[in-house]
Image (cartoon, rainbow, N blue to C red; front, side, top):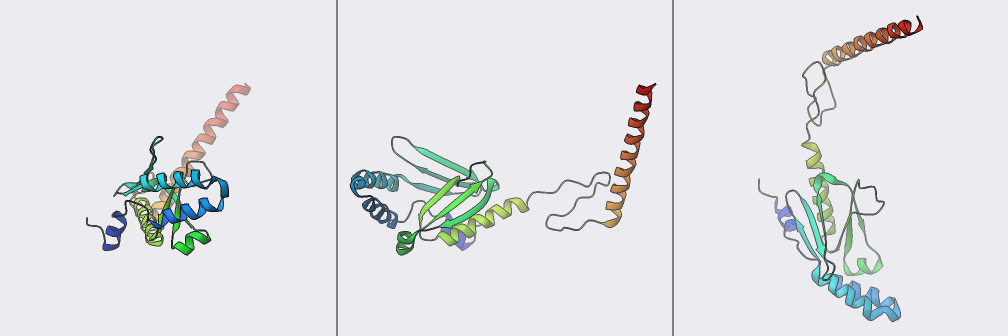
Length: 186
């Protein structure tokens, strides 16, 4: 399977755009006396930040002394958001926030410094949905029939047979429980 031309552009992204460094400089300048420290932190973060898009998932790493790496499989992605403030919009940048069902309220991964943020979002959505569409539903009990993925319909006769079987099992369980209750009373 060869990726589509747009997918090739996304797969080629390995670093944030250089305008992210400008964003870090302007952001740190706004905070006044902390400017030098924040600018050094931003420069190190920019220089060490790497992205890698693969067929299975996405990874992001950064840091020198305390190296951090996040790897997410497309199947774990629950939601994707775009966020940009005034300065980021002025520079044409945005952040892609990727959320999973990890239990934390924040994003599991934040891809920042991207000029092509909308294609990245669309790519992640297509991969996320593609993984979920490949999951085969379980067979309908008692019939061996499987509901095709993406089709919300079930054969009415098969469904009736399954429900009749379930009802018979429940009646049998209810009778057994009633008989045991009668034995306990005696």
